[in-house]
Image (cartoon, rainbow, N blue to C red; front, side):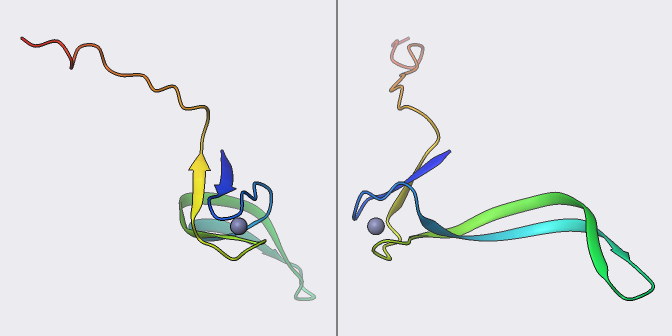
Length: 78
Ligand SMILES: [Zn+2]
C-alpha cells in the first residue's frame, strides 16, 4: 500500500485520518499508571488522506502495479 499526491507528486508525507474500532486491555497499577498491553482492531476505516506538502486531498492509493487484466470470459459472446 502506498500513496501519491495527485497535486504535487508527494509520495512520502501524509496526514491519514482513520477511524478505528478496537478492544484494548488497559492494565492499571495501584499507583494509577495505565498501560495498554493488548489491542485488537475490529474495524478501521480511512476517512481522508491529506498531503503534508501542499494540503491537497487528491491522494491516490496504489496497492500495487496496475496489471490491466481483463476477464477473457466476459468478452466472449455467447
Ligand atoms: Zn501534495
